[in-house]
Image (cartoon, rainbow, N blue to C red; front, side):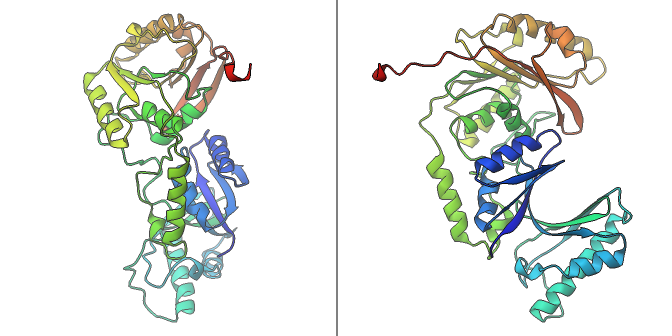
Length: 383
């Protein structure tokens, strides 16, 4: 097959973290709004899907061109080498989106791309009809400022679906965002990690996966596993790498607390499903009752935002209690995600740094309070 172009899509504000993950896999990349693009081989489809913790999807880029008329879109789509990727028996639906482009009717664009792909495949396979009963190749036409990008989705369901969530609360944090929150901290697996608002356990579970270097996709399937041009052998190779690089012997001290005992039980079930129940301690607790004697820990929390009418005062009081409780943790680093504009006022301390992130469609700030670096451990054997 040779070199292919892949796009790892990302939520706004998370692109640089996705890019770091792509580079850690050994691929150079280009970072743009909402996506990270890189060139690689077929094995990269498997490795990127298995390892990327903060990306939404991995898409195969088939082509990109300017299209200001339906004729442009049809002819340039038809000219692409679709048969390099799509077999004669494939199911290939087309989805689309259009932003700031002359071709603004998404349904028309989808129909034209579908027709163009059919014509291209007809010429190659010399058939007049496609049953579409084989593996799924979901095509997307994305128009932005009259540039059409044509991709095929390699992931299937979004990468945030890790396969461990058996239960959830009202507004669960996406696993991909939870992983991003952790990767934006200074936490290392030898330090205590606490989520005082753990809900269904997403942040502590993602921390355990990161702490033991367990690939987030180890427990799920991907649509491209059925694609012959990648092949089962490459998927087996990638999954063997996942197994080889996991550090199951890494001890971890991870805690998840929540005021709601039902959420604590759901979190325990999710951790059990992920195979991480022995690594995380879940407990019912209010934030004002929190206390740990260990130094140099890290707190990552996604507390209630007080967005609903009648909740705001209660939430602001809780922020005040949180600030007083955490003030005693002078060696700890604390990271809190909320949409509340006056969080620092109620918490009682300005953040070391803030970062804008989107929790779904809600604009939030990630308030970061950096503690001192832990002292370097001395290797006695070398003295």
